[in-house]
Image (cartoon, rainbow, N blue to C red; front, side):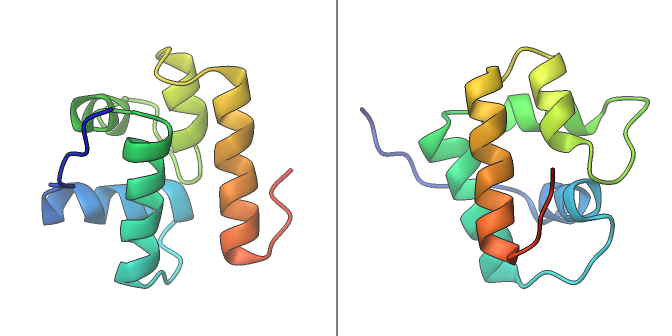
Length: 94
């Protein structure tokens, strides 16, 4: 597996932060960890994230579901995303 450098625009990071966390305060390091998880562990390309973020019905906290809707993640990966978010923020998401 090729290890690629994480290159995400600050615009995408801001949009992602609002989409996933509904504008909740999130440290840049936590956001970078989440992006690395999505891109490196789940192999979601930057273009896929950008596509999901352009979804016309996007509202806060729907990014994981939109990724699944577009076929960018499987149900197993969707569960991994929720597990990661739950562990990272020590909150119950389901």
